[in-house]
Image (cartoon, rainbow over all chains, first blue to last red; front, side, top):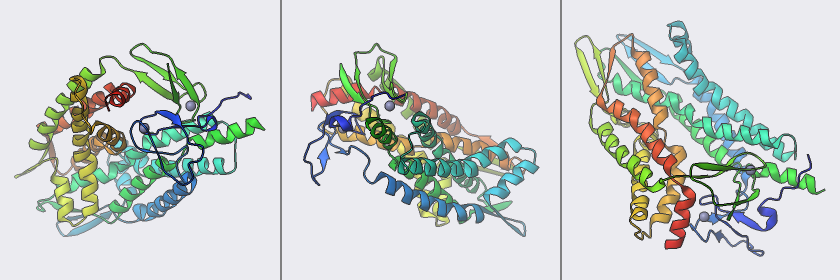
Length: 213
Length: 199
Ligand SMILES: [Zn+2]
Ligand SMILES: [Zn+2]
């Protein structure tokens, strides 16, 4: 499987990430910023500081994931009783009250997807840092998967928004957003930014280097 | 013939002129490099206009109603955001407002702003930054997730009250598809080539 594929970078070219125009990368660019001749956005052969940035955003997301799961998402006050619900207690409520499908949807979107995204991004980062050449194609698929599903974790944030909009008169009950909601939204935003700052082309740079030796 | 580099693996490809409704895939990693579309400008504009009509319905008509005994309550698309503001959670209110209300509107407006001049061969200096912005906001527009949130909330409140979906919810649900059709009708390569020639 020693095919000789040549990337734009090793041909001295650069592909614009906004408009995909392929242009020549100036030999001595130094610290000067190079702009796309077509759309004017900043050009980079690889996303700048991709690994460090991805690690930083990912670690921040993992830290916020803890309070997001432990603190209450909603606080429901109904005739004399006050009840605080975390994500997990919401899932368990659905499992016990007959709508287990909804329980599973929330579990997947809120708990499983962010966790899976952490694991995949850590694996991708380590695989590039340790110069792995195994299964680059499957790693690209994993990367595309994290990009595609990450946003669905916003589900529970929206559910809380809709619930407090509907149950607002305070006659039957009053629902207020708990402190977990903001942490949870941060987890989703930070993991999305982490996936965006990872550069999948780094996976192939390692493979190409290996083939040239 | 034009050259293009795969954005997932940076491999350079020569793309021959392609028939409409075909796609080119990267020979190394299999990602889609490029899709050729048919009647791209007309289809994009048609879906965008339909989207704007649905958008207006979605923000002005009643969204969800809740009936529980004597209490009958109406909400609009913006009620949730309003409540978050009232509870003092401004960052979250802004996030929901952006991802579910404002960004979809901005997407529709950018499509009009870029495609009407293209349709009538007019020059628009701001088309390039506007079209770049469209690509940047796409991942943050999350109407379809909000719609799933509505379904979950209806099930959650089913024991407490009857939820009556309003006209706005239906418009909102349709808008998700219409906006997706509008965006998928966009032929990015053609748009950039034309903007480059005209600038
Ligand atoms: Zn460009
Ligand atoms: Zn590729």
